[in-house]
Length: 209
Image (cartoon, rainbow, N blue to C red; front, side, top):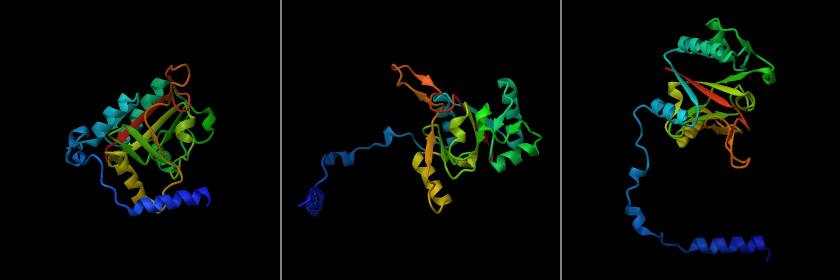
């Protein structure tokens, strides 16, 4: 008998015999204290956790406030070119007379501007997918990633964010990724280096909706 069939037969036989759950006393334990209670303001929790991951957060009262803060960031950082390929964001910025955008040449841009699918409050993560107009490379190629989101996109946990994607798309995107702060690695002599595999800085502008 081939090894594969032998293994499958053993699995079938094992499944026919019910096995009592080990450590029955564990069922009586109260694990509520191990998890954070669902916050009344998940956007505040996201901001706290995102900053802990070296992310930079800005709350915006409205879209006009966002454009003003983005312009101030560009001036302070002395950026000349921001890459953006999302029509909705480009239209929003142009409506507010913001034209300092390079719509091509991602390689020459100093920062990349994208939206996101969701923001995950409990981990301070940005949930992105390949279904977004910005594509797969925009959020990781440029040295700075600027993410724009609205308050109704903040989910408490990763499972909540994935459930939102299931409701949004008939078929889940081929790539779903979580970005938690700037790229970092300690593979080189156990020294933490930021920006090796992605952006050195990550900004989130959260717009009230």
